[in-house]
Length: 304
Image 1: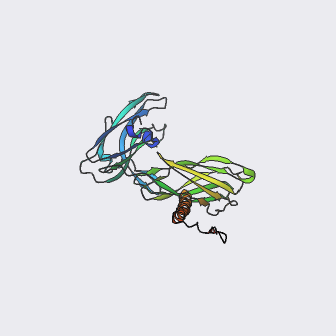
Image 2: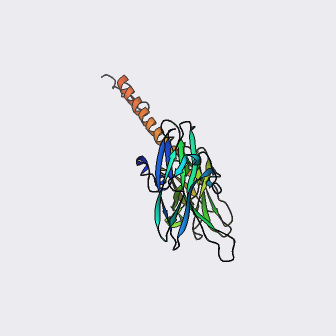
Image 3: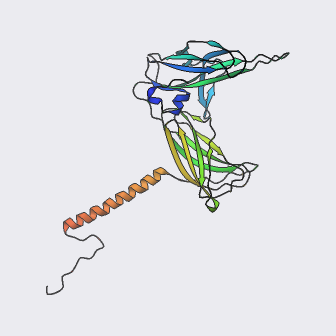
């Protein structure tokens, strides 16, 4: 990707993929860079193809599979010939029909090269790399992106390798691609470990739920640990902290007891409301000439 919308130039996803919100009847152009990283001249085919979101992953269609989005895409070159280590640019134009319905569409622009079969062989290998497309169509503003972090579950594999599985739900109106890391602290003897990246490749459609997994070193003690989970998709970042203890090899541990930020905010809010209530009662008591509850009224000695 060589281009991104001005308002998305700080969004990491928009710098890698074609991500946009477009009203019906809109046309956009994106410039793509194709590089031959071999010492041989290559013919590279360039074409759009369909994609879907299934099982918490971005799934590519077979070959030149088509969908509604691919019919909107035209390329100024359908194939290019590149010498060793050469590069070129291809421009993709996406024209959204004025009759297009509301909703997000998915696809990919592929650059595909086939290798020559070895002498006496009949198998041809096809190598392709692509740029994903996430296009939301509809009038007005773009649906907000958001997600919530849920259950945190520690485990150890049969060989003793620890992992942490984190449940995530897409609570926004756009697809999300999750990245992030887990940091462990307050472990045995006050030890710390990490950050450990979560595995990439988890993409959630709006309303969908899935899991991200962080792999940790086998020598990691069982704990207990304070686990800080930091996840993001583009400009949206969410964190949660949980107390976890890793089980023995081949077992799944107990669900981590999460310290929810929402709970923290409600706790603070309740404290503030309680303080304001006490201050209000004290003020009301002073105005009425009565002492606050629990405080005895001063008595005037007899004869005075």
